Amino acid sequence: MDKQDKQILRLVITVFFGWTGIQKFAVGRWQLGIAYLMTGGIFGIGWLYDICKTAMELFKGLTDAPEERPAGPEEPVGPKDL
Image 1 (cartoon, rainbow, N blue to C red):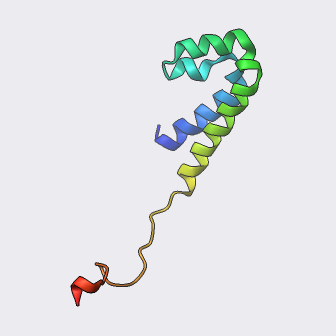
Image 2 (cartoon, rainbow, N blue to C red):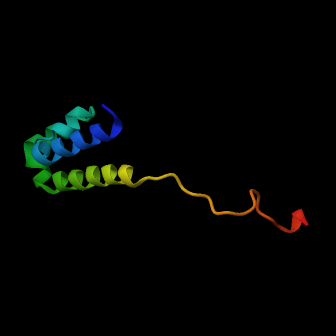
């Protein structure tokens, strides 16, 4: 399972079971997981935050492309180069 598949699985788990705090237990933050479990995802606000955060991490990973360097000299030309 590659990184993208893990992020997709994490997003699915967060969307469907995030109010239980399962995503927090999975990453070892059991104290926050218990708080989510007892408060329904911290009254839904924490759950929505986690969904947005996980989705943004996933989509950022999908759109990250290698940057193309502009054509030009390798080193900047300045007064010391003259």
